[in-house]
Length: 239
Image (cartoon, rainbow, N blue to C red; front, side, top):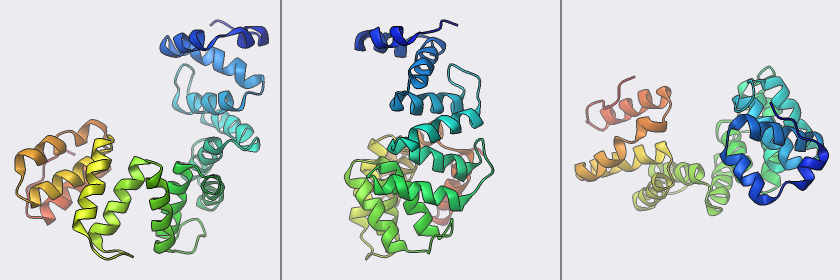
């Protein structure tokens, strides 16, 4: 694997970096590692993600977390959020929702959409030692949604459909699901398709429902089948 010196990193033009990013993942990872070791905080965050996912390098969650922490200590919002994700999911460290909630709140306080979304989950469910507060959770989801955060838009739709915290408003729910689906989120696609079925628009519904398995998790497909059956429709997905 090619190695890069500090001089190489400094001499890399934006165009050269773009070509590296579009080329073999191993070459890009080598450049990112060199930049991370030089102290470039954005590179530290990217390299942490590559180590976590095993992109261009062997998967090393513990090492990925170490890089996230280095960038988080330099106040990089996404790195702060990713430290929380590691603790939430047990990536490179034992699971600890309390520690995860701490990091998510830091990221949310810095205005990061993903931080707001993840900390809102803690507030909504009362996890991680956080006092359950659905109203505060919805406020954070709405704040993230206003930045265009697709998953938060979908969750706001669920609140309006259920009439949870706010009054039930099916038109607002439908609008949220549509924006979420158009943003590429599988949950938004499913809920939009489900509401279209309930409105008798089967052909439109199917166009969204068939796309759900492309990016969905098996757990969600099982949940989706149950929701369809609760609405009087047959299960659609193989799980």
